[in-house]
Image (cartoon, helix red, strand yellow):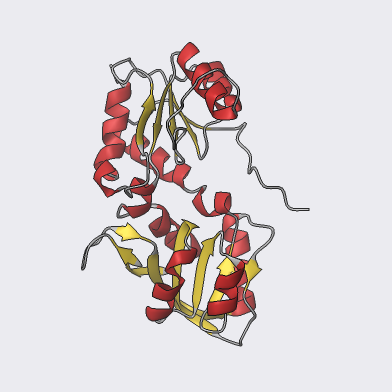
Length: 261
């Protein structure tokens, strides 16, 4: 019999909670970890719709990238989307676990996965958790065959399913060395420049970051969801390798909350 705790333990072994950032809330969000696991539903964000889908599929464990609970709830009345998702999960006997920056910083985590998806070779962590550590946020990678800026943007859009990229002004660079960070990684642009990368791929870059650093490095900003959707693939692989033939599903109701018109 496989328990929710067994699934969670496999994820924690791959991406220990000790790796999460101080401000984060990775880990068990709610529910009974000692219950037998009837199935796992994977998502980026936990919503009412995702909880309802888990119930329909007979899954009593949801594994998400973004935590359902970032801040303490002073009331649980159903007045907000988070509160409604919490109520639905509790009523349905569904446990929720989130691996956020713990997965971002793990070897083989989000940024490592992005490197593989782009066909590049991982070289080092962009922002190590400690000097010389193999854990940390972001990645520096190398393309065996350099790409011009237009070709790089096309590769990014095709790889991550992003219909739009916000980019700094092209400067005729050939991109051989790449820095990237899944999620909101604008704060690491100076480190990306210092790494010698010709391009930096991340999301949620501020206007003034483009102004201040666009001349130093080719900044490519894809959607936040697009940059972290691969979390579901990582969770699927962790669980399937540990528990072959176990019922693990990608959420079919989850959609990118941002629509490009």
